[in-house]
Length: 113
Image (cartoon, rainbow, N blue to C red; front, top):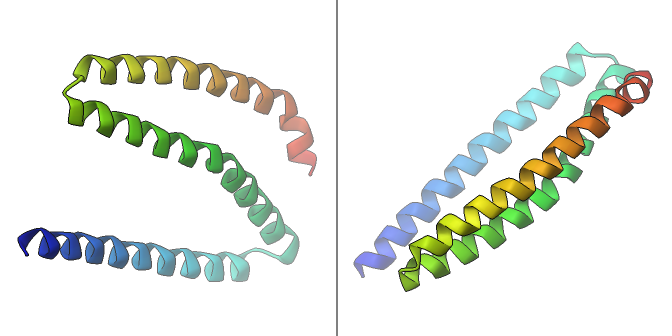
């Protein structure tokens, strides 16, 4: 019963925190839509859309990393966790640098959008 109570408490905390963040997001968009004109607000929303599209692979990567890390931790294979994180940081860094270079190269086009 104690495990269920802890689980319920943690789920409730995550739910309340998510709702607070959603409310703040809603208020932010109301404020920004009133402060900016239609064209500038459309530009802001377009940039947010690009960031959301970029965050989809990051979310999938986070889920996969959590799965493997928890499996390794449960089996007591801590060396594999270290190797996984080292490999992950190396590969993600390469993609981040490539994305940064691409962003710099396309910054003129993005600015004129």
